[in-house]
Amino acid sequence: MSWQDKLHDKKGKFMFDKLKQLKQLKDLQSALAQEKFDAEKEGIKITINGKLEIELLQLNPSLEKEKQEKFLKDLINETIRKMQLKLAQKMSQMPGLKF
Image (cartoon, rainbow, N blue to C red; front, top):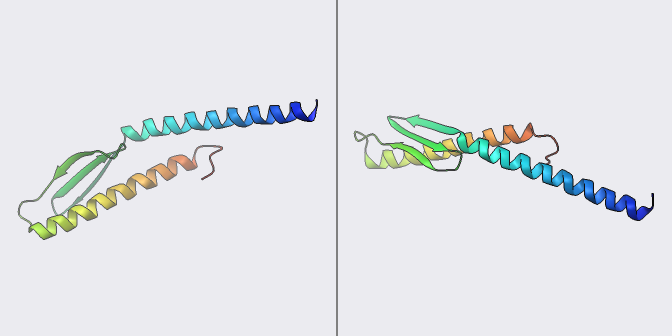
């Protein structure tokens, strides 16, 4: 086999591997979209899905406005961290992906 054939073969394998990884990432994206991430504090609840859409936002009318705003910000950040952790765990289980 000539060096040109070997080079072509390596490029073909490289492209095939990249396409396989792309499919894995799309599958991961679909799976993550089905997930829901929740957080709750002082009667304030939030649910965000894997597409970063807020599905539930429940406030506590007995709390002051400033407290609600602070808790809501904290809960959104907590929920996003949960999502990032789940994504990192799933990606670490995917062979061949190096990030």
